[in-house]
Length: 309
Image 1 (cartoon, rainbow, N blue to C red):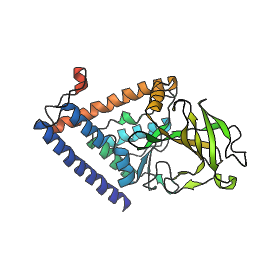
Image 2: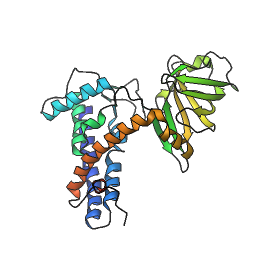
Image 3: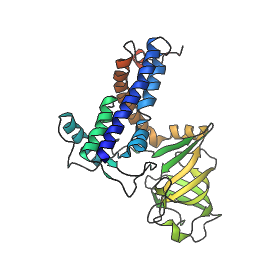
Image 4: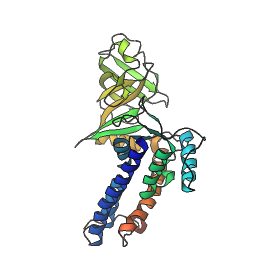
């Protein structure tokens, strides 16, 4: 029954999105949109919304890792050959049945069935999303682990993966409020945090925030994060894993912070890899656009963006 509902949801998503894209294509064909404008519309309708669509409307969550990529690629090839997408290679890459508000794993989710994976592949094919877009970066590339949770007029609320290997004594301190700690993560990055308030020690372990299925915010304070923030304290939230070790940092990044982030040496290889992946998606998106807009020419093919009319 769940699989039939998922298939129906995927069919509706494809129909509704194609109707929306058809209207955009009609505007382009009448000369009301430039090539650059119509590309942004298609890109935002598909690539930037697909994770939200999968989570909110289908209850699906994609995992990106080397072992997960092995299984995804093998099951994609099986599906393209008309066979059930069921492989024993690597690890699970698609999960189903979890909280639709969750950004991370939730206890009730399970690996997607072959039918559910086929529905996801149907979405990918309908929207020309290359399977290689799900390939993770090589192991030698360090990922920033930054996720934008919400954007504001002058800042963005962000969550940063920060797997702490040295918390400067924070977890063992029975009364950390008002004290400053230097935390180091497994990449060697440091964060300096002055704690404002903290959960009691007995509540820090195995505590889950039911609103987003993330570890509960164990500490609040202000501070700076190497590679992410400028030399000015920002509000900060520290989330702990099941053992009580800090695993996520939450903060607000402003324009000066983004400049630090974009220029930080450790991230440059990741940014180059990301640009290659984005170009791969752009090629797929261009093919989709031309189904609705026969006269579309990718502005990047001519060496720059077309000016808006």
